[in-house]
Length: 197
Image (cartoon, rainbow, N blue to C red):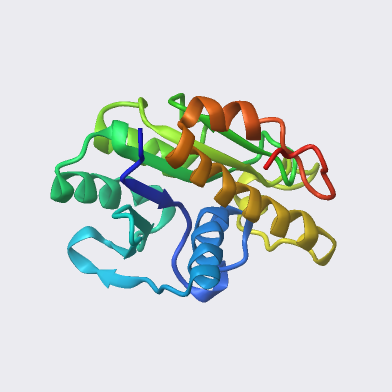
């Protein structure tokens, strides 16, 4: 099954651009940069969006994180889609930096963006691609950690994770989420040579 709506979660604005919470935006932005397309504002759907030649929509909600569900619900309604057509790219503090993990459904796990989507859709039965941003260090609050910028020494791992996330999405689209889970859920950057092309 092809996911018709791929949503990367994040917060709008320059000050949030390269923060851990914005890894969903970073994945879609890298995709756009590599393939030479751009996002345009879609006010009625509270987001920036692009359409791939194959028809899928890539969406970055322009609401703040805790209102992400507002944009997702608007897109599903407008395109007459169901939660089964949705894949959400999201940060995860339960995963080590560089790890990616696909799930066909599941709980919000304390993530405010996923909570908002679940509230607006009335279900947690939608796919998500979790991207590891490392556990909250001692002395940090969860909010301050996810809103912190990636450090210089983390750039390689972040870049490799972003690339792995795109490959995982493309694998979902061409071979299905079960195959993609088997192939990518064990992936961890940097320098991981186990990823099967």
